[in-house]
Amino acid sequence: MSMLTPGFADPVLDAQAAFRAVLDAMSRPGRLQNAGRGLTPPAPLAPAAAAVLLSLADAATPLWHDAGAEADGWLRFHAGAPVASAPQDAAFLLATGAPPAIAMLDAGIEEEPERGATLLIQVEALEEGNGLRLTGPGIEHEHRLLVRGLPEGFVAAWAANRALFPRGVDVILCAGDRLAALPRTVAIAEG
Amino acid sequence: MNAPMEGYNFAYLDEATKRMLRRTILKAVAVPGHQIPFGAREMPLPYGWGTGGIQVTAAILGPADTLKVIDQGADDTTNAISIRRFFTRVAGVATTERTEDATIIQTRHRIPEAPLREDQVLVYQVPQPEPLSKLEPRRAETKRLHALADYGLMHVRLYEDIARLGHIAKAYDYPVMVNGRYLMSPSPIPAFDNPKMHRMAALQLFGAGREKRIYAIPPYTEVRSLDFEDHPFRPIRAPQACALCGSRESYLDEVITDDRGGRVFVCSDTDYCGTRVAARKGAA
Image: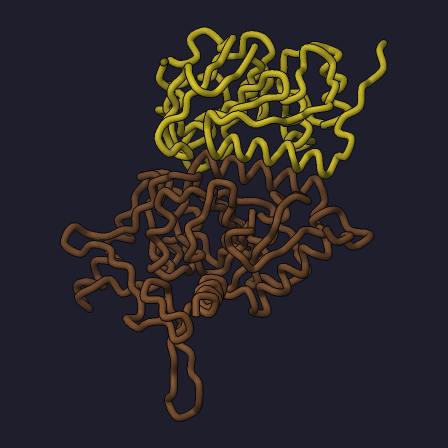
C-alpha cells in the first residue's frame, strides 16, 4: 500500500482560496479559475477537483466518484465524506471518466431546488476565448469556453437540465489546476 | 495584516460551519433569488445586528481581502465599526472606508453610490428574507408559492396601494423579480437603490441570521422592481441637494440639527460625500 499524500498544507486558508475560486467560477460561468496548486492527490484525481472536494465535501455530503481505490482512500481520509452507493444519492459527484447521465442525478425538488447535486467532471483541457458560447446570469454578454474532452452528448443533456430550472444539477469542469463552473442557469450553444 | 486574535479559528467560525455556509452560498448563486435555509450559528452579537451578513462574510473572507462595512450608508456608526473591528480581531484582515478599495462590502440597508466592480462582493444584512411574509405568514405556504412562482399576492398588495393612495407607497424593501423567476426582498434598502441591483457587475449575497436564510444575485443578472404598465416603478429621493457636498444624485438622509425644527439633508453614503467634499477642497 502506498503512502497517503497530504491534503491542504493550510486547511483553513487553502480551503478558503479554493472556495473563492469556485464562487468566482459559479458567479461568472465559463471564466477560468485556478485551484489546488501544490496538491498532489493520487491519479486520476487532479488538483482542481481535489481542492473543490476538500473545501466543500464533508460528513454531511454523500460523494460518488469513479476515481478508483487510491483516490477513494485519499478523499475519505482528507474530506471524510461518506460514499454514495449510487450516483442519484450523491450531493457531490466526481467523474474522471464518462460521467453518469445528468438526468439521473438528484435535481432537487421545486420547493427545494438547492438539493440539486454538484457534478465535477475532469476534462483534458479548459481554455477561454473560443469554443462553447455561454450566456445567462453572471455573464455580461457572452463567455466562450473551450473544453477538450467534453463528454459526448453533454450539450444536449445540459439543455434538458437547464429546462428543469429552478431544479437542476450544477457542473464544475476541472482540468489540472483549472476549473470553470456551469450553474444550472447557463445556456450553452456550440461554437 | 494585523495578527488575528489567539484561540479563534480564522474568521471566527469553525471549518465545518464554513463548509455548510459555502455550499449554501454556491447553490444560492446557482438559483438566483431563491432563499436557502442554513444552520445559522450563534454569533457574539445579537440577532438584528447583522449576524446573517457576518456569517456570509466570514465564509467568503480571506487574508487578502479588504473589508468595508456600512450601516445605512455610513462607515462610522456603531454597527459598522463593531463589525469591522470584529473581523480585524478574528481574521486580521485590512479594513477600509473607501468603496473603491474594498473587495468585500458588508452593508445594512444601502448600496454604495459608487458603481461596484467585478472584483467586489456586496454582502447584505437581511432582517426578513421572505418578501411575502406580511401577506402569508406560513413558511410552508410561501415556500409553495415560490415553487409555483405564484406572486399574485404581492401584485394585489401593490395594487391596493394604488387604489387607496394613488401610488405604490413602499419606500424601502421594495420587492424585485430576479432573473424573471423569483420574487425577492432586496432587504430594507431604499427603493432608490433598487435599480443599482439590476445587472450589477459585483456578486450580491444576502444573509438573514435570525431567519436562517441565504440568497444571492449573480453579476449581470436581471433584477426588476415590481410595477404596473400604467404605474411604472419610480425610485424616490428627497428633492434637495446635499448640505455638505451639494450632490443632487445621491440618496439623502434628513438630519435634525436643533430643537426648533432646524434640519439639513446630507448624503447617506459617507464615503461618497467625503470624497466629493475633499475633491472640492482640493480644487479650491
